[in-house]
Length: 140
Image 1 (spheres, helix red, strand yellow):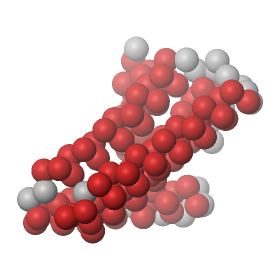
Image 2 (cartoon, helix red, strand yellow; image 1 turned 135 degrees about the vertical axis):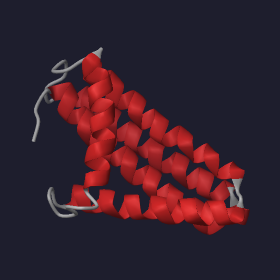
Image 3 (cartoon, one colour; image 1 turned 60 degrees about the vertical axis):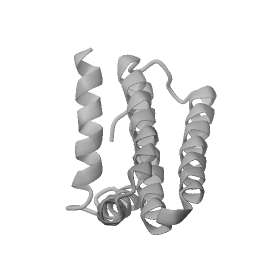
Image 4 (tube, helix red, strand yellow; image 1 turned 30 degrees about the vertical axis):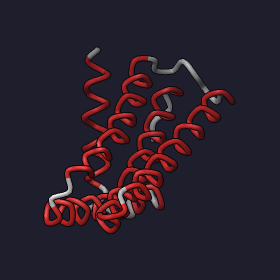
């Protein structure tokens, strides 16, 4: 159980550390840097607009943490498995689709929703990357 909490905390730490080292892992950390900046902009725009409906975007990072927690609970269970790759692809598509849907649904707060959607999509992608390493127990 300790591994689950540790990996969930590490996910946040690794994601936001990418702002300091944006090119440390190439495109993965660059996308995380863009997402972290979009999160800051989205929070500022959302607070200025007092848009409580933007809180719906919290569901997507929570789903990312659930994926990472499941992966941390089952380290090494899937190594180069086709089901794992397909499942992670479905997860990433669900994250991007959910972010796009929420962004489109919140028309009044379009800019804030758009920046938060970018954050959620990049966070979901980064979580899938970490979960893939945890499931296969192969770490960079």
